[in-house]
Length: 311
Image (cartoon, rainbow, N blue to C red; front, side, top):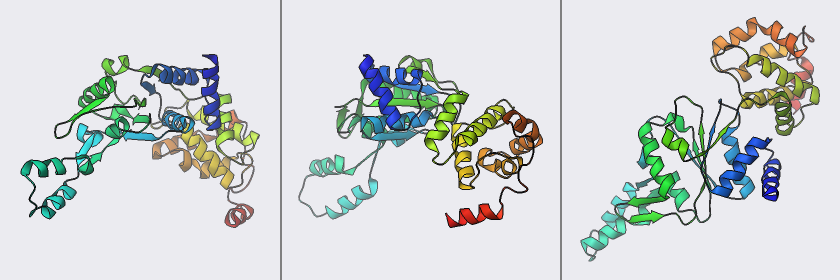
């Protein structure tokens, strides 16, 4: 067991995913027990990325079902390719085949459009099935999903029952915009991912952003930690941390200063009121980072513009 545990940790590290023991343990149990893994946490903390890293590590395909309000079983499961069916009927108008034979042809797999759930069930090897942001779907869809996850079979009236030859590895994510049902939770293993601590987020920045130096990575992380303590409409996650780090590297910044922070707030925040609130408290935020004054007269100096243009 210990060897398998270490193998999963090593596989995630090889995919540049910075994982702590709780994440490695959850993935180990999910793959060993073949149970769906429900991952919850704030937006932008890397829930979806776990499934992507898992698929790469297992050298299998990632099949993603993006949930949204109004999602129904047809969209998630299968549809008939009506245009091709009509074309085939037109071409077979003068055929001597019986009606039963014609019906069998147009309702065969060649005219079936496989959506994510059916793709996962009929895959040639166990894929990673990512059911992303399940909390955005309706409760009726949850009930339908329970049947699929329990039996791993789908009945298509025109064809019959299709059973999974390889049970997928299932990852479900939720941002907790609404509570998921107890029935879903009982069938899953559970993992909560919060905003990372300082050391982990610095490690993520250094791993994911080539060219960022240690000092800048630490300043960025300190600033993001301070921002998350504020009452904002959209609290930035790790995804925004990485976007900001890449932007600062693109501007050839080695350290933070007040001017460059002011001029790149739009990389971190996507709400006007949040930007105004941060701007009003910027000096206090920068003091927590250790930046108390403008170090340069402008973030976009002639040298910066020239270097960026040359790159």
